[in-house]
Length: 79
Length: 318
Image (cartoon, rainbow over the protein chains, first blue to last red):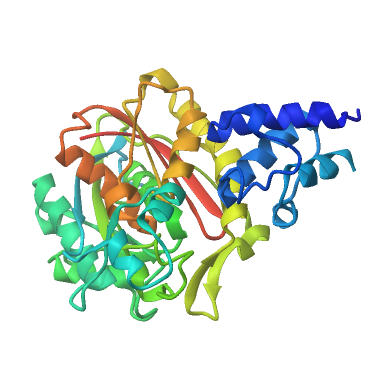
């Protein structure tokens, strides 16, 4: 089942709050994980795992480095 | 039919011992060598300081030191030991094996002696083998040692690995016992992922951090839970969880999934670093030394590493 952009954004906000404690309102599409949200490479793996559970889309490790912003992840999940 | 020795009812750990090199290397020391920071290291891997071997420390000498302490603590004499297994993946020389030399230096006369390479799962593999050898009547008292000098196999200019690995040894004596004090080993491997942790250029430890993190945090708690189930132990009965000290975030992530909030979680990595097959017996011995694991307490171990390989079992603290 396809998820809307807004659903994915809200879901990512919940996931990121759970993993690194960031306010969900801070998680907006243009934000960079590393530069804006202070999320490191291991937390990115945790986000990918949680996103897979939530949205049913696997994000392999070799794709993670290309997903720099929240919008990149939204696009990947919607693809 | 062949005649067989009358097998004891069980096998149990009767003593532990450890050795750490005296040289302490702090995160501040590493900041002078590579582009890193105390904050980065502590947040990524949870290590504050580690012990690095001096020129006098070898895999063999550290194994002898740890094994000698375990032997002394057991009250056994060297003649009582009939099997020596050294789990290691960092020997200086492949030939001769380490275990025979270790046995000779400890004064153990002519035991069965072999090295075992199951990388960071080595101690759990060796403990499983020793426990079954004792239960099967092939050994009465086995000395099981994990000893590693990872500093020989680290690129000290690679900030992604040199902050993690360290040196040390831990040992346990496994003896015939009325009651079984070592639960069934649950072990396995995943050789199709051999490329996730290996020696780059046959020289330097390399790992795909994200792949290893994903593997350890999503698959290994199931191995740990199976070891509990096979031993007939409920998560609520655990005194402590002592997994391989790979990375504090991996340790804590697996611990969270066990459903054992009362269990003390080993955090030996904070001051000992990642010492591969030595990390579990080292942590156990140090925790016992601090009075954190009372005699008779039930502890879950879980080793995992290059191969990929993994093993878990429940043990009773002597």
